[in-house]
Image (tube, rainbow over all chains, first blue to last red; front, side, top):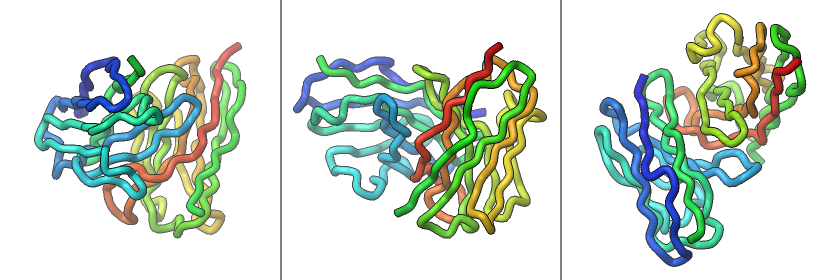
Length: 108
Length: 121
């Protein structure tokens, strides 16, 4: 099983700042099959990024994904108040599909 | 509107059984691989099980293998999760979700609202 490790566990930033979230895989992720999800309290996860760098439908362009192999990054260029949430990475190229443990993005 | 709606959660005693349902609408259900993902309140997401579009192939996380069974009824646009021999550690919110594109590996683009399963005496 591919283990995904996200860092940091918690990121404290202010609106307008840039956020950089990391996801490292224990082995290479097949065909960059790496996704990012956002989850707010009491809600289901929402797909942000798939294929490591493609934005899902309706996702603002302040969200961007990059990386390949074992190292991936989610960047939020200018934080809006609604961006404070928990973010998960997921690999879907190798069974079983696995998620990282999450990064909580909180208001500083 | 593309939608997934789970039902069937509740309180069950250890060793008991429960069947979750997920009603799909707004898309061609029979074309998509479907999954169950669970989340202990306050914790992370864990993939549980997957079924292919015609129901001929399934897979499970090791933690539920032999106890849970995923199935689907494409005529009723409904996904199921039969959960037997339930344990306290199965307590979680259970989400159904689908692969973004039909007939292939993909990210999960549509999620239900989740249904809470509590295993306790």
